Every structure is written in C-alpha cells, then in structure tokens.
Image 1: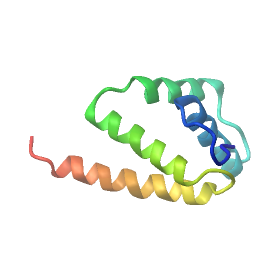
Image 2: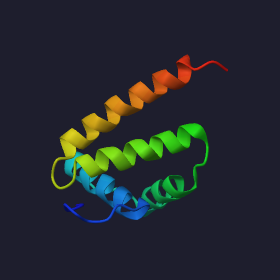
Image 3: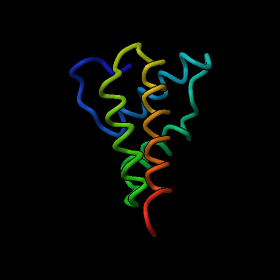
Length: 91
C-alpha cells in the first residue's frame, strides 16, 4: 500500500496496483505481472504508452492507501477518455 507522502516510482506504482488487485480479487498478482508492469512503466516511449503511464501516476497519486475502488474507477475513466481522444485524433 502506498502511503501519503511516499515517493512515486514505477516500482511503487506497480506495487500499489498489486496491493489493490489483492484487495479486489483476494490473491496477489504474480511476480511476472509485477515485472511487466514496471518494465512498461519505465520503457514504453510511444504516445499511448506515455499517456497510460501518466494516467497510472496521476490516479495512484490521488488514491493512495486503502482507496482501491476509487483508484480503479479513476484509471478506468481516464483510460477510456484517453482511448477516445487517440481514436479521434487525425492520422
């Protein structure tokens, strides 16, 4: 769980997402999934990848601690808005 004031990094963001997944599904994510989350957070340089990372960073920062339902709602709504904006953008 990411506490108030703790620094945000790809590792802390992915650990917090794993914590919330465990709260929701009652089982922790695999180590493989955690490593993939960190890798994508650090390394995805595409426009969509950068947008997703920024959404994760913003939503996790706003919803630290046990507020997992609000975190998932923030991510779902933000990702949907971003997806629509990328689809609407001229090619």
